[in-house]
Amino acid sequence: MRSLSTLDTLFVSLDTARWPLHGGGVLVLDPKTSPNPVTFDVVKQHLQSQLPAMPPLRRRLIRTPFGLTEPAWAEDPDFNIDRHVHRIAVPPPGGAAELRELVAQLGDPPLDETRPLWDAWFIERLKHGRIALFIKMHHAYVDGMGGLDMLSHLMTTSPDIPNEIPADHWKPDRIPTGAELLLRAVPNLVTRPLRAARAGTGLARAVGPGPLLSLFRRGKKPDQPAKTTGMPFSCPHVSLSEVSPGQIRRAMGWIEASMDDIATVRDEFGVKFNDVALAMVTGSLRNYLLERAELPDEPLTAVNPVNMRHETAERAVENRFSLLTPLLPTHIPDPVERLEHISTAMGKAKSGLQHAGTNPVENLFDLVTPGTLELVMHALTRNLVPELPPVFNLCVTNIATSTEPRFICGARIDEFYIMMMQALGIGPVCAVITYMGKAFFSFTTNRDLVPDAQRLADGLLEELETLRKAAAERGSH
Image (cartoon, rainbow, N blue to C red; front, side):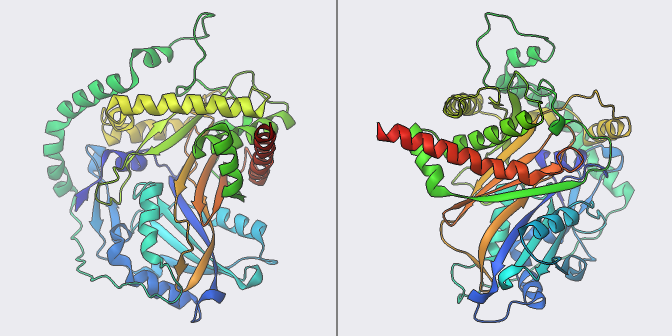
């Protein structure tokens, strides 16, 4: 068995039945590119053959009694791929709307902790003879980059090249008793005070006294400079990020955008790809809130995960990220001014994270035991009140993949979307994945708060077109 890292443990501790912390990937495939039929059995066998290269898929979660220390991953002695891989047909007429609705429904139920925390569906009867593969996985396994790295073992660069079959030296674990788990926790309990002290020092260095004190302040002094980053629990109240008391039900919306159009905006205004993506999200949210007469006078607070893997580091199948908290200037009418504001804010935020030399997210959650977090989460979800403030208004994350086509069992991957988790206190989540000259944007929302997630997704293209025209006009002068 192997203990979970701090970040992996975080997603286990914050997981509840009402707010399960799993996500998933939706790959739309064209089987006509394959020299052989691409059937459910073929895909399942392919997945089975690649399990040695994807170790988490045969590991089940083992919690320590009372949450005294980090849980562990055990190689599941009862693993059976037939319990994880399923087939289903999309309802007619088999278009994007029907696929989005099906994925949202499949994504809602919590995963079963008595077996490895993932499921996959082979989805048939899409328009134009296409199929889809939906893989649902708990965030405790991997973050976005780790998940993509793991899925890459299913892919090839040509429809005619078979995947290399890795050697399988897998051995199942014996599941320990409760007493054995308690004994296993003793060394960790002895060293936890030292870890907590180091974490506190690292957190203070990374965050600094100003932001910490701001959590206890109300209002803003006239002589304070304009903020570019936000803090948890200090964002404006809008309906799309309210804390819903019921069982979470997802809604999905997605679009694909031209990387050429995004590059035109990026290059003309001298900003980053992520800045343009955040500006698109900001413009879509602004229009959405204006339509509902909800636009606040202050910016929304977003959380933006950033990859903390080193380019030279060994590939890791676990969570390795930190968080930026940019303010999205939905209150600014001019789209170009919004883009420039975001670019400045993100530059300062990334510089601050690099200067800190430590990961504030890991530091924060190293201060307490997993059991403490679980008690807090269960108390919150049992006693939710409408006045409970959101932690952040939304989350935006992006992942870069290949610029060349990829194939699974010979079928070309045409589209790639992400279903994100819906965490307590965080509103809609927009995930961006770049692939084959396109940017695939996905919005995952709480259906009770934002039933029409596709409206948010469509707003992204509207904002990109506005920025593209502004870039063209500026370039003509």
